[in-house]
Image (tube, rainbow, N blue to C red; front, side, top):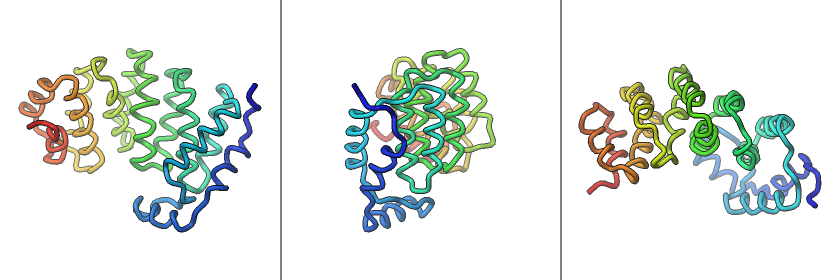
Amino acid sequence: MKEQWNREAYIKIFENLRNEQIAEPMKAYMKHHFPFLGIKSPARKEALKTYFSTYSIPEIPQLLDEIWAIYNMTEREFQYAAIALLGKKQKSLTIEDLVFCAKLITEKSWWDSVDSIAPSIVGTIVLKDRLNGEKVMRQWSDSDNMWLNRSAILHQLKYKKETNEELLTEIVLKHADSNEFFIQKAIGWVLREYAKTTSVFVQQFVETNELKPLSKREALKHFK
C-alpha cells in the first residue's frame, strides 16, 4: 500500500538535490530565463521514480491543483516536476483538460516545458477524441501565442501512422512563413519525424510548398 500523496515530500526530494555549481551552467544554457536548483536529468528522473514508487498520485481535480502549485515554484526543475506528475495521469485526461494544458504552456514558457507537454500529454488527449481535440488544435494554431502555435504543430509528433495528414498540412502551411525560430524548428521537426513513417509524403510536401530554409533543412535532415 502506497503512502498518501504528500506535496511537501515531493518538493523536498528536489530541494535535497540542490547543487549551486550545476545550477549556474544550466541557467546559462537556458539563456538565463529561469533559476535552477542544479539537478541533472538522470538524478531528477531517479528521484521521481523513488517518489512514485512510495506515494500515490491524487485524482483529478486535486491533481491539477497540486500540479499548478508546484509549477508556480521558482526554480525550473519544479516545472519539470509538475509536468512529470501530469504525465503520470495523462491517460486519464480528457478534452476538458486541454484548457489546463494551455495554462501550463503559456506560463513560464520555453521550449523545454512546451516540448514536454505538447507531443506526449496533449497528443495523448487529442488522439482519444480527435474530432473535438483537433478543433482545439486549430484554435491553438490560430492563437496569438507562439507557444500554443508550436504545440499545435507538435501534437502529432508521435502519431506515426495515426497522423492526420490533412491537419498536419493545414497547420504547417498556416505558419510556414513565420519568422519565429521556434515555429520554423517545430515545422521541420514534425515533418522529419513523420518522414520516418511516410517519407514520400514529406518529400512531396517539401517540394510543393514554400518553407523557410530552417524548416526545410530540418525536415530533410535524414534524407540522402
